[in-house]
Length: 254
Image 1 (cartoon, rainbow, N blue to C red):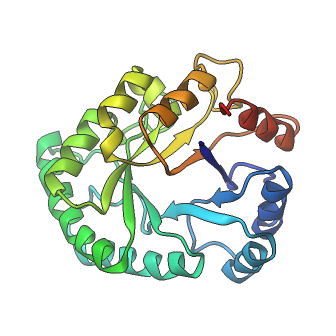
Image 2: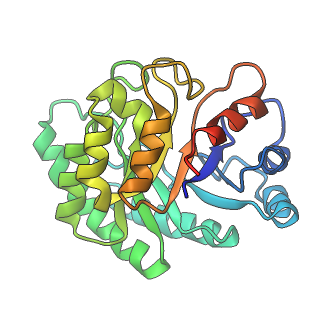
């Protein structure tokens, strides 16, 4: 059955992160994820994890939005190792990787070649550390203008060329609905390459019910392709956050 995690960056924004972990458990969901690790009280979060038994599904590799940059290979490789050390303290083995923005004066293909080389070096560390790097395409029309990686086909081409079992795609269904649609078709097409999934309502990046996307059907399709990882709820919940989490749980087929 589908496994949900909650991106606690976007829920209960006025509470400390360790308290948010407790709220997730109280809502009946047993996993969380977050963005950066360097700006958080990790000891408090680890204590909350120990109290609640909540899993950590993943978080961002740091530095983020840097894969497209020139001349920072050592920094990116070191970032994987550092992030892996933090991940192990949460018993987590998935790290999210954002690509970065377009490089001025450079063709997309030239950037792609550098990204592939850099990812190859990072994959070696990920394999050694037992981590899965999940490369995330984002939309440029609403949330991330000038972001370099936008479609599942682009991400799949890169992941296949890198050729490491420890480099996968993060399929963010909200972003891909805006970028290209074909949500269920692309899920089936790229399922073997998907290492993590994010969901949110579209338009608006809000709750899962009431927008353009039929998440009951999407959740059933995720189950049908045999995906057994976490599906991250990465949306801003207007009103009662716990109520929207109950709503998300109700969309999962028994």
